[in-house]
Length: 360
Image (tube, rainbow, N blue to C red):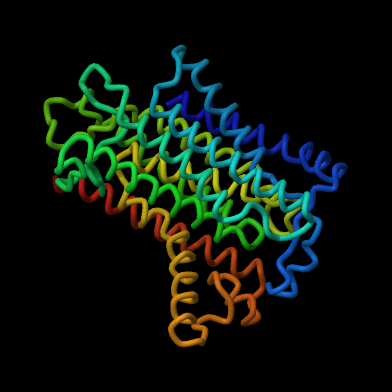
């Protein structure tokens, strides 16, 4: 437990005190945000605000994560290394996107094709490696089975080992792309995505602690009720580090934001969420816990689909938070209410998780 606290606390301090230093650096370099012209007019005042704050989120997470192992006195487990690698890799794609926007002085960064290629390379590498590295009990970090609260009977390897690996890679990359883009779409108002991520990863700290205490290695006498997660404690440490990093960064990212996380942060956080959900065997449960991000994505899909079919819009503007902006809601009001929705959905997910353990 102490290692988890250390991870979160160190990450929080690094983000809290490192962000203002990074802001000064970005201001000196004139690395500011470019605002899309078709967005709400109120956003035009944000032009020039330092971006790429995701660099600090990633740095704080990694420092907090590594600090925890000084307490444990052992190296990180492979599951944690995979999630951190996925987070850093997608953060690098986001950084290139943000830097391209700054260099070309426009609100569009990398081309969609290059983004897809970059995400694909990182995602495939993660997916393939996640099926390697068996522990003493034969468990790999990930499973070819689709998981809800734990692995289900839906096994992607039903048609053979080779095909199963390919299907798992496709499934895992779908989750990675979906979650990274979901957080990216949510990052449209000051503190909205950061606060939402804080709630989600904080919830995964609780899930991880429970899985650690109810691991099949610990409660083998009631194996039907235990969790077959390879490295639950290490995944909890990662979740705690990200939570702490988001808390520290939110101090500077809350309205009026002094820095934006940019694609560097949103892609990294989305990737980390996908990685933790896959390796903790809670892929479908994550849809409830991270429900705020899902709602934002669905609003965008509905808007685009309905417009293509009818030529009309369902919302004044998508994603959903911009719709309420154009209805006259204040930015702070929208963010706080969306945070409340995030808390309620995360609590619902946690309730489902615990209820399944009680009745099983």
